[in-house]
Image 1: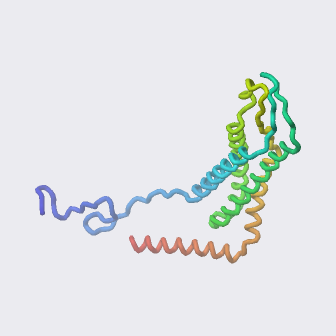
Image 2 (image 1 turned 30 degrees about the vertical axis):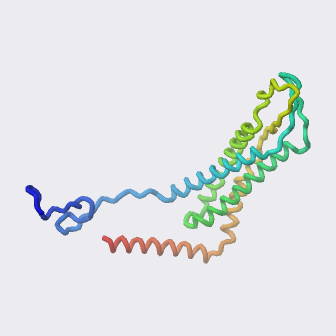
Image 3 (image 1 turned 135 degrees about the vertical axis):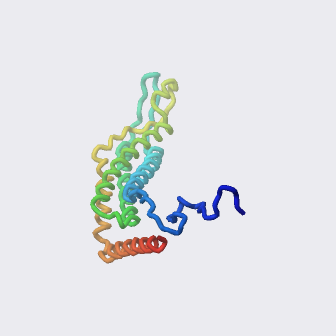
Length: 217
């Protein structure tokens, strides 16, 4: 079927393929490719913050507390229990360290093409940020669960739970230390043959992709 003003040799897909409509190939402009390394490092950062936020919220809900008794509108007595404050501090250091080591091992196994000192340094940096997120979300969760002392000012004679303030200090160094240590140990015990096979496999995949691109062109 023909229509006035439209020729039968018109290619309706002209501009969408590498064919100019007359059977001649033409060079399409190269599209800019997003560096995959940026996505990998961003993914490690996002994964770390998400896991630390969840872990911090759980820590805030489960951390040990003091029992306070309201004597009047301005005074409350606290029944100090042995090791309550230290237990919260210790669990902060243990939880952040375990998370850092687990994330470092996961990243080492899942991203063999990005293994190296740059990723090692990046894991140490993001683990510090994760520890801060752990503390912030933990304090928020603890406050939401137990409330603040000012909420009980009018409850004279009643008692409430209050979580001791945690000042991590040197405990902030546990996560980056274990993260770097785990990543380095994983690289140290990994046989060179396995690393070479990973590199060879990636090279083969890239070559196959190039051949397929050449064949399709």
